Image 1 (cartoon, rainbow, N blue to C red):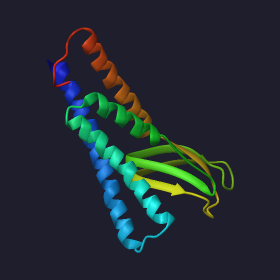
Image 2 (image 1 turned 30 degrees about the vertical axis):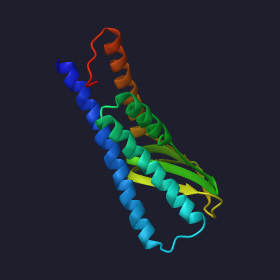
Image 3 (image 1 turned 120 degrees about the horizontal axis):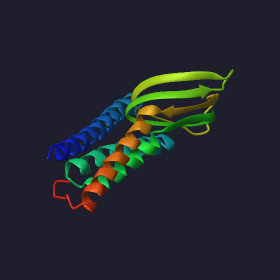
Image 4 (image 1 turned 180 degrees about the vertical axis):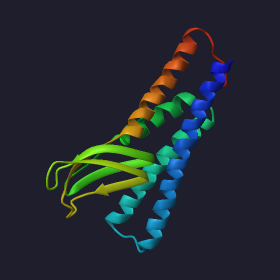
Length: 169
């Protein structure tokens, strides 16, 4: 019985983490949108894309809270995988975080410099910008959360296999 509550607590933690991370992203996005008005052309597409990424995080958490565990865990895993690698080369770059980022990486802009960053929710997306970028980062929190999600999925699969299933799982 105790194991059932531990599993529920893990799923609820993941759900709220995803929802809060996505909600903070939406709040940052609205603030950015208001501060850059009017938004035209390619910028409007970029703002829409940013909203979709943060909505993905919120949707994953919401599915978990609605007891649609399998779909919620799958979407959560996809969301976290998107957050593992951040990169920038030439004028192109991408870094997505919906929650917490603790990253290790290398910046090759001038020399090979190792970087260690901490950040909260953000989405950086550069297309053909004039930024002189040459870096790669790996989000350690996202890697751990993918592992965490896989362990939850394995636990659910094992419980189904031995016949310990109820509608709350």
